[in-house]
Amino acid sequence: MSSRRRVGRGTLFIVAMLFAASGALRLGSGIGVALANADDPPASTMALTEPAACETPMALTDAIRLREERVIVQEAALQDRLAALALADAAIAERLVQMQAMEAELKATLAFADGAAEADIARLTAVYQAMKPKDAAALFEAMSPDFAAGFLGRMSPESAAAILSGMSAEAAYGVSVIVAGRNASAPKD
Image (tube, rainbow, N blue to C red; front, side, top):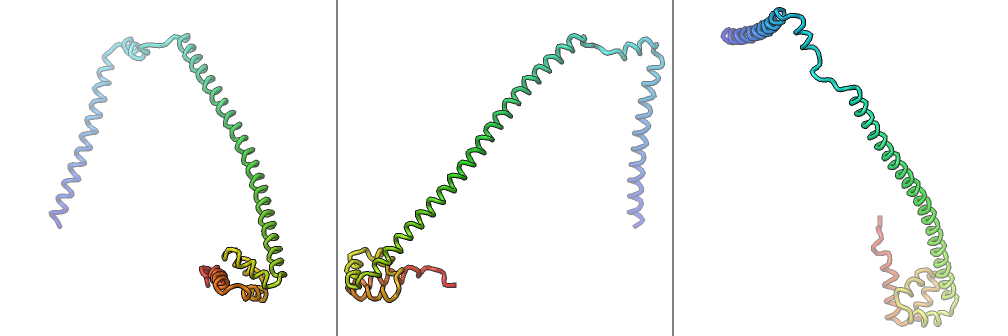
């Protein structure tokens, strides 16, 4: 443990000596410059402090004027772009309002059409229920099984049973399978 302390102390001593040497070098270089400047006459110091080249006021004025002209052109272009963006934004907002109105109108039309179709189907179902079962059975046998199953599914069980009993066994079976299978894939829970 004592040898470890000696190594650490030696390293710290070397680092401290390097810092001291660096400070001495910096102090020494500053003294050399100060001594060199002390021997020169004051006129030479004045010559060193004057700027090497200075632009004329006219050149500076021209440069500022040109820059101002460029800035004015850029501002005008920016204002044009902002105006175009404002017009586009207004057009988009107007188009959005029109589309929302069209969507509402389309929803109303679809609701009306769905209601009308539902009313037509309900009316036709009532007509088939009011028919004599034998006549309705002949009509249902001529229909496609899917179409017939749709009407039979809407009828009261008594009317549907009376119509199915008047149909041929094959046609009644086909319609019954379609009615029974319509909700087979529906979730049970």
